[in-house]
Image (cartoon, rainbow, N blue to C red; front, side, top):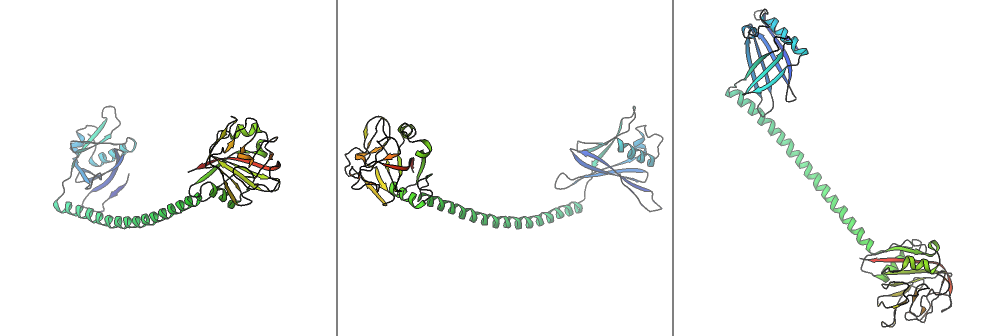
Length: 348
């Protein structure tokens, strides 16, 4: 609580304050002792124009409570202040009046009420308040416009950055479509050779691969090849022989153990060492042979795994694709290979 006393010798006057809560908002009441009366006033700022409440209470008004019967006005004020320090006042708004209740702490007299009425304002006061509000709003409007302009500039810059970023992403995506990435021990990250395979498969579409079989990782047995590679379309077979020649074949026909012959007019063989792509010479010939107990075999043995296991291959050079062997080994003879890989191919 605070206290201020005037220094006017001809007029006895005391001002004190009491704090209370209204809807979780602190309300400060000012109590002024003047002319043997207590003037209680407060201001509530819960709207555009603050509301001021005021009530004037004589000693007689307060002594009707009987608790203050033998008190003079100053003693009444001191007692109210003292009681409010350990019994917090309560506040109510009823019928446009503000009711301040101060607990007295006695059994017989529980509390005393002070009813404050809204204080009327003259036209000049109201005009000044509205003028001050309009002035403040105008200033806030100017500041808000500046802030909006700053935000617009930032948004414009951010939009440009986002568009540039989007364009770069799209460019990268388009650039990716030109490349084929393969998890290959044979090519060992040689992007140019991977891109050559992509060009062989589809130069104008996005091509990706999934490694399904690697001889040195999964084993040389024909059973392993069929377990990992059957019924996959389209697919790519990639081989590196004992001389370091790299070649392979692509087909949309599925390998299996059915013992059947299948045709695929889009199939082809290729040699990365010779940088050539080979199509079928006769479209009505069968493309692949699906042996039940052997490995993959392209027509005529231009690529064939029919010896002991996947570690031995042949390239006849006389089948339906080739006039030359894909390997520098003697055409038609079986030769050892360093690695064989089989991929599922995705064309988008």
